[in-house]
Image 1 (cartoon, rainbow, N blue to C red):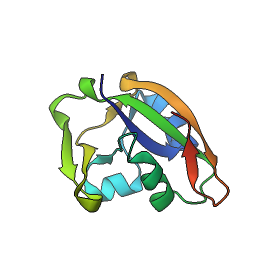
Image 2: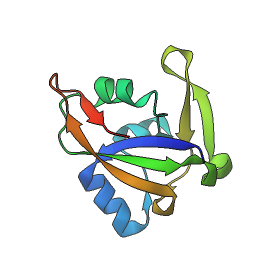
Image 3: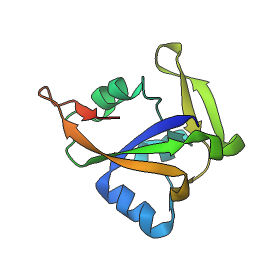
Image 4: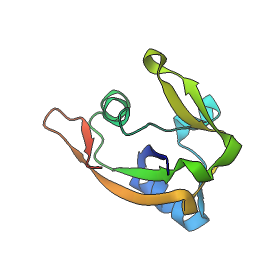
Length: 111
């Protein structure tokens, strides 16, 4: 199983649970796909895009069930990042993890 991660607000996650799928955050809609990170990429993504946010959840997602809608594309520093060109079914989420702020305001996730 290949695991990938999505940071989103608790409100967005609660909405997704009610609908059965997550359709993406505002930045995802602008870019045309849902942004994900690998475990190794997650700390930098959290610090760069979610600094100071206290309302976050990290979704641990089974990438293998997302099919051809998931593409690994170059992004920050040339690293390949997972991008989902479809809604995320909540059935693909293995765990919703608590996110805490570190001393400098960067979100931290214990995987």
